[in-house]
Image (cartoon, rainbow, N blue to C red; front, side, top):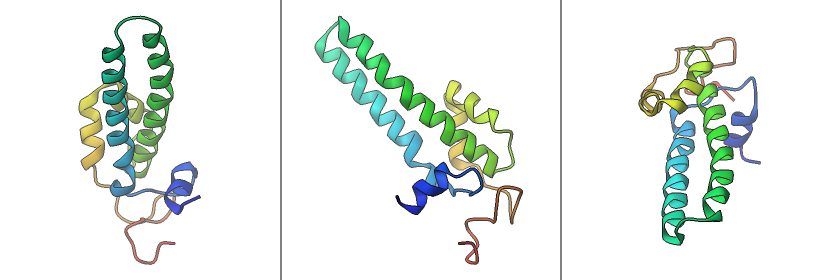
Length: 114
């Protein structure tokens, strides 16, 4: 398991904006692919299958957004709001984390951090 994945799954480590970016970008790519796939096949049971695939994607994005909010000293529930409000994702992508260590660990941008 890569160190980036370990940090995302850890409740104590912090992540950088660079480590957070793949989640919303991957989410939008997967949603677009599912949309194109569904529209090319027409109406029917494919719609139900596509909806089953999109819910786990939304859950992963909500978790990653909550972790990103926590790293920036913003209430984690704002990450869930950001999933509901697409403009919030843009804010999370450009949000600077707090300087120095906080209750969740050292600043990942410091060279002394593991």
